[in-house]
Image (cartoon, rainbow, N blue to C red; front, top):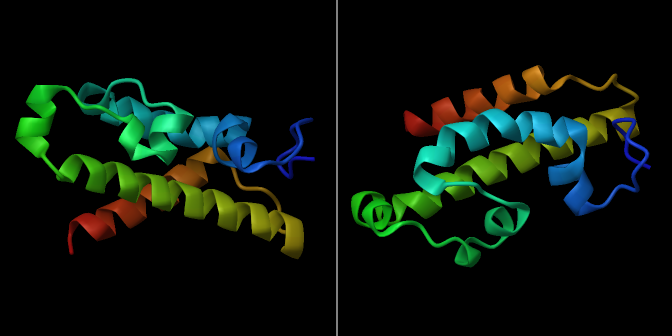
Length: 114
């Protein structure tokens, strides 16, 4: 079962996308990226070859489009995974989405200043 209290079986898709906690974590990042990327799905996040940006975005941002989406995806996945392991193996209480969003935002900020 999901360590976050969902009745669903824990799978990669559930932990990183379908779980209520994951949805709440993804929401601000997907909303912020929507003007450039449009509506992103689990498939387009996993397989960026399934993502076909509009021509104007391709011309403006070029490869940075894929760098940004890859970076956000990796950091969100990492924080969701670390939180899951703290709950499962260390019996540390589950943190809320706001805490994970703050962690992801901090990592993104650090990465953008390098």
